[in-house]
Image (tube, rainbow, N blue to C red):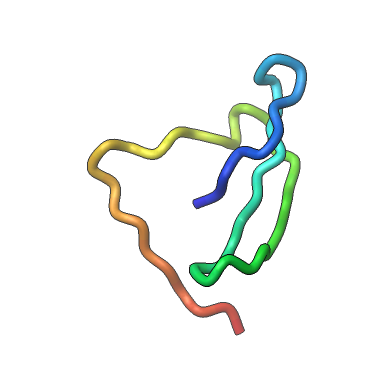
Amino acid sequence: MGTVVLVHQGGKGYEVEFVTLDGETVAIVSLHSIQVRPIGRREIARSRLIN
């Protein structure tokens, strides 16, 4: 799960930031609009350790 931090060309693409649960930025990536979707109302976030 990431946060859109910048919208490109009226929604054709996005800069998305991914952070750990304690607030450390893991990555900021550029994505096309087809690679991004809003979260669903009943979705549950889950996490995993990155080694």
